[in-house]
Image 1 (spheres, rainbow, N blue to C red):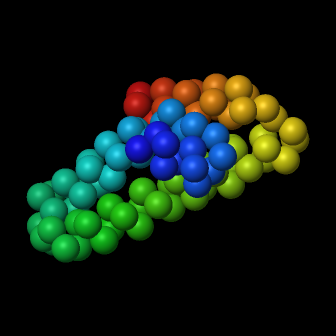
Image 2 (image 1 turned 120 degrees about the vertical axis):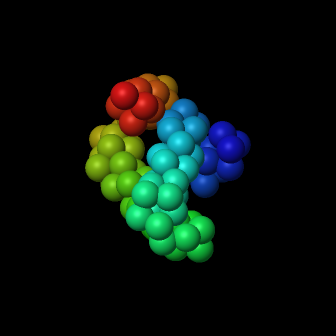
Length: 87
């Protein structure tokens, strides 16, 4: 997982496990609590988690990169994002 995110984004995103957990919780909520079934849960979890990831990239990582942040700065930001998503 970490090598894929590093290859696509250019920095290691240490919050990728939190995004996976977020998708699992959303899928569970849609399938079990709303009773919409597994196909709907997969689609909704994919879209919501992808949207959150996109917003985090556009709101956190892209502005830092535009300001000339080093890979260390981006790694620290991803660790902080992981803590925020976890708690």
